[in-house]
Image (cartoon, rainbow, N blue to C red):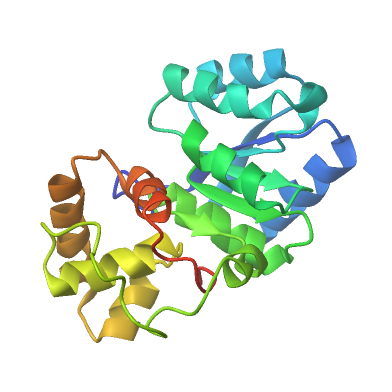
Length: 225
């Protein structure tokens, strides 16, 4: 299911300077089912033109293309098609690159060592409006959720205890399915909790909530599933 709530296949645009990388990801997407690659691009100009033409559900982007102009490209893409979810697929796994991608508006970040299954699941998660983070990066960023004391002054006092638990998981890039299983909640309840959190935080979507929560020191934990 895509972010619009329909069962139509996700439309995916692949942006990477290396044709071999694009071909590899295309094969993974097409083998995984539920998604269709509608175009490929190797330069900034091609990305913007293809985005405008296809308005894809998901853009898989290596920000190192065109001498590292990809972070700016994310903002340009989202001005053209705000509904497109950007999944960064990068050789870089440093924390600054991850933060820059999410601040630019990306909804997910995977490193190029990711497995085919992780890539396909990441595309589907981003297409469904979820945020996802490479599991190795997430594991490096801090202690596990629920381990250790809560900060003395929780940064979002307007949230209920249950909403805080959900936000902790959301900040770690967890999927709704994982959160529901971990907290013993119905999937619909998790969706409702997240909608409430977005409203209380004054943000438009879960990617913005993820950035806000991480800036406040939350969710530096395990990888999204």
